[in-house]
Image (cartoon, rainbow, N blue to C red; front, side, top):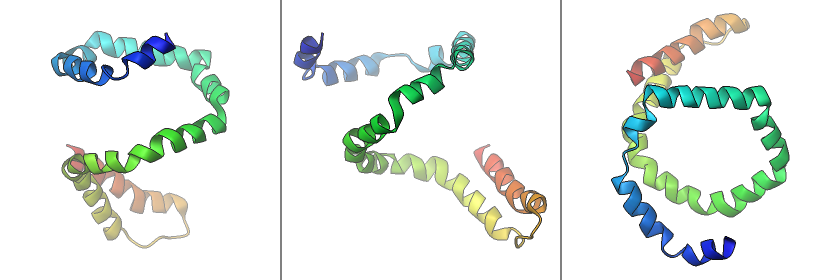
Length: 131
């Protein structure tokens, strides 16, 4: 299998691009059945502890190695590619959050009062900006 996969690497990107250009993803992925399947799968994984056991099986070494070998080489390119979406979709939300934060009263020594007076308005601004 690995040999065959290795030999196929040169044609996979073109096939992938062609197949995904024709694919209908949105309707099946947002269907009521898809939601039920997703919810059931996540609940089952949590109940069986699969996520946590997978994290422990991989460990920090595998995580760091993957970040260094795969992530570091593409993160800048992917951030650059996402800037347009960031500007149109997230920047207005962040702007609303920053404005609410800037308008917040000074911190007090009461953490609960700070949550009510400083944090909740920021969250409310984010929610309003998403609508």
